[in-house]
Amino acid sequence: MAYLEVKGITKQFGGLVAVDDVSFEVEKGEIISIIGPNGAGKTTVFNMLTGVYQIDKGEIIFEGQPIHNKTPREIVKAGISRTFQNIRLFGNMRVIENVLVGTQIRTEYTFFDSFFRTGRFRREESEKVVKSVRILESIGLRERMDDYAQSLPYGEQRKLEIARAIATDAKIILLDEPAAGMNPQESEELLQFIRKLRDKGYTIILIEHDMSVVMNISDRIYVIDHGKRIAHGLPAEIANNEKVIEAYLGGVKKDA
Ligand SMILES: Nc1ncnc2c1ncn2[C@@H]1O[C@H](COP(=O)(O)OP(=O)(O)OP(=O)(O)O)[C@@H](O)[C@H]1O
Ligand SMILES: [Mg+2]
Image 1: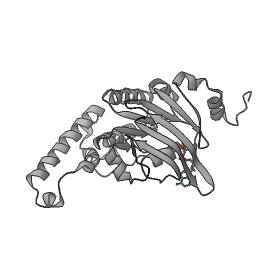
Image 2: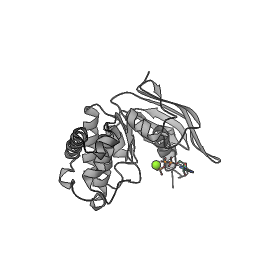
Image 3: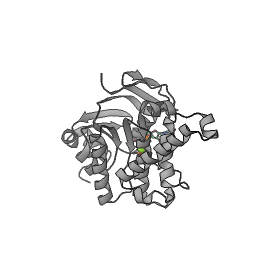
Image 4: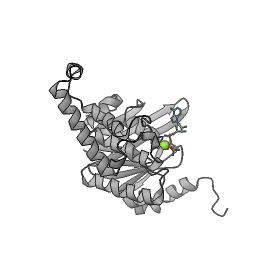
């Protein structure tokens, strides 16, 4: 059984079948990309994986356990965390505080502990700060720690979202177009960083439009078009796949 098994998931919005019977598997330590044209259903797949949307049909099995009817919070606790296509940070909170928010999901102390600021509370809180600073260091945002999140350039806000996802002690990290809005140098750094995450044992599922990123980094690629899985394979196979080329050129005459 694969680490993550997605079996025939389907999501309908009114008359539109946004994701139609999509299946895929991810092994531990892989970097898997999900690609496809605009509106193909990629983000909807992430929303189903993270419990934002209930699935209409199918199953999602992570480490042998079904997770498809769990709440977003339960899924983060199980070890699946994400970033958003439209950055969702607390802009008027500091960089470090945004990462701390990620660590809170693992809180062990009780309300009593926090109310009376017990030793346990203070110990846990200081451990979380140390952990958050380390994560910021690893992603190159340590010097920005005290800045307000909204003051960061776009590329750094995307990194901060990844930092927050890591802070939840995720095992699988879902990245929804992490290179969007990054300049070539920033995307190259991001690539290196994602590889480092994989080397540390994280499993990565990536949605990305930047083909230089996708082709460089992916172990395998799944392609979705109009809600359906149309191809799966190694980067070189996908780059030469007729159906994939057709989906991307869709409607564009070849001689035009
Ligand atoms: N909450 C929703 N209600 C209604 N329709 C939705 C909803 N979310 C997504 N859709 C529709 O489902 C389809 C798939 O959307 P989705 O955001 O998953 O595409 P995508 O592959 O992520 O596209 P993009 O590359 O533009 O981000 C689109 O037609 C979209 O308009
Ligand atoms: Mg999307």
